[in-house]
Image (tube, rainbow, N blue to C red; front, side, top):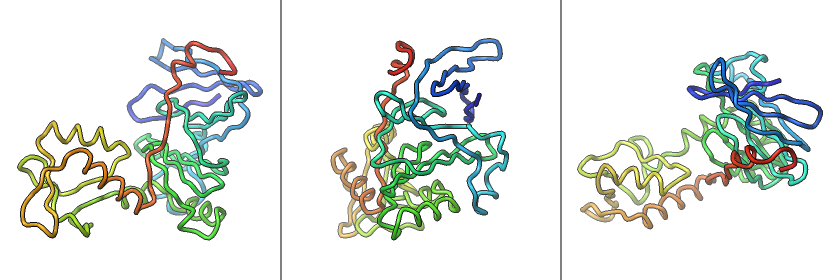
Length: 252
């Protein structure tokens, strides 16, 4: 039996019997909701933390927290499923070869996996990092990320524009009349743009122009996509399968 962990959310309890897992959600101390069951072909248990000195500073070294998240491959459909804060299907580019889930001191796991093509999956952010262009082999990438948590590396590499991160084309970024300190890339450009527009018009000042220009969504999306391509990051493709689990039993 394993219990997922997440900050400020209702955890799942995972019961394992042979190749079958049963999933319950702890609604309260006295109420448990059965979510569904799966017959699995393969799976990885999130451990806290993986080996590596850099994890000791910000994560909890407590093996009773193993299983704070997990990923499983459903037997019949061969689809991969993440179970943590939420349950969803994801689509790896290759075969999963390593999976870790270090727990931070705020009771928040940072689950991630790497496949045999060198792609790194950050489940907590819905982001995929193309690591194969950074290393001479997948083995080298695994050794690097096993000692260097990929989440801080991503957080330090996602600013399109900031005080310390200059952009070759964009000088400044505005929402309404307020100049923004940072422009941070997110995996959902449309959602980000909608939230910004609620506060005012989105404007940029290009380096080769002396005036601000209104930024429509298509241009905003193009800038985000070009930045992501340059940084070798991309949104993770996922599919919510909670309704499947509620309506079907085993071999979804």
